[in-house]
Length: 171
Image (cartoon, rainbow, N blue to C red; front, side):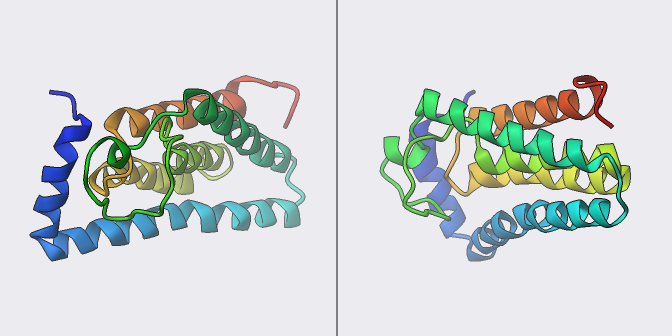
């Protein structure tokens, strides 16, 4: 059965009856993206200091994917679950629309793909982080499953293509 907007009020009520679980969702929602957002600039600086030619692709691919993903979000202009059902999400930030695909998830995913290109152990760590972030965003009440699934597919897919398949003349 697909998760629809009318399922979210019951989910939020169930999570709020379990404060420790709700707190864990909130904490993971903050910590999981932090891994990618911290490691990415550190990775870029490390590649720069090493004068590693892969720096160009490491910066270019996530940058292009971020711009394309933002354009897709604006084109779909998809409402968030809390706009369609009467409930307060666990991590509400007042944002509306542009739910598809999840920017948190596609950003974390493309950064993971970029790290697979330069440092596979960190790529694996960030892949696990992105895969955990996807259901957390749904449990937090800010995305539909389709939003995070599209974010994973778009982020990893475009990141993998950009890092390993396209632009063969780039280092």
